[in-house]
Length: 191
Image (cartoon, rainbow, N blue to C red):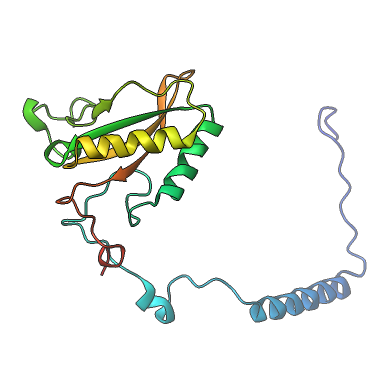
């Protein structure tokens, strides 16, 4: 008996089944032979073992975006500042000495950040002047970066992009290092 709420299904016909099955299997076999000939991305087999590197965990500190690269040129900094301006973000220049630049410990407060989510000493750097609200020219930002570096030659200097609508920092990158804060060379960061 048929239950009215269940749709009736018709069973497929088995007529010609073995012949259809054989033709479908031969098509699958041909396709798999073609796939085997296709060049595929390697997943680190023996041929690529020498290209795998290990990150050096000691003496290899970095800051935010681009800090793993060699120092940026003025032209490269200008392009990054233009990106901030194109997004409507306000450039802000910050600086800090080497002893306080890294957010890697509990600092003077000894406050354990594992129990206070989001708190780290040294997260905030000293602001160079006020944020550059209304700035539309990358040369103005570069000039302020150079003035900050000249006034505080033993400090790190970074540019941050602040979104005044969302009230958050959206980007940040290092533009100057102190003479004693030399970055680990790019080719020396891994072994």
